[in-house]
Image (cartoon, rainbow, N blue to C red; front, side, top):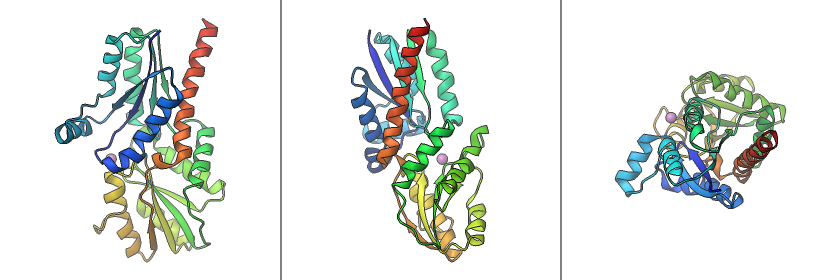
Length: 266
Ligand code: CO
């Protein structure tokens, strides 16, 4: 039986961060699932177009990739997403996978980083390794992408878990709730003086480079400095964290487990 693993991410047009994040996750998954042929897809058609125009590299979106796998005669396909939350992007992918189920013997989708309660716990442990040792008046502020999708509560939930784990951490979002203003209010209440800024995103791309760490007056760095905080910028995507990489590998493995259980039932 021909088997493939398709790793799906939003994609990024920033080469430097892509090599350190998406590509490392892809390579780890591909190496671990050695019986499966490796394929890649990006969900962002905008990024796919940009890369094609700039670098002449063709990257499939998930539907194109699934069609290709079908045409090439694959029967068992594991799709592992590198999405962070079960948001809009992931749910769209889920629907696309559903529509392709009749075309494969086995087609299974691995879960995003933050799905079950245990995932949140494991992600907090992973984040711990990238957070510097902090003084009492020091905190870490994560920039999540944010969403208006019903999954928006993932952001306050991961913050709650960070605190429960003894980490003086805050999570704000670029597009959703909480916003940086909400975070600043609580930083002040808690007498924080030094802020470590980090993206809670797979890559350190446009949002991290510009919206988080940029020199424009509306970047989080500028806003925080304007409000009197000392800001230390940590410009690395979550995908650089080996524990986060391993977490995605684990989710892909869970797909194999799921397939084996299905066999037993059948
Ligand atoms: Co965005």
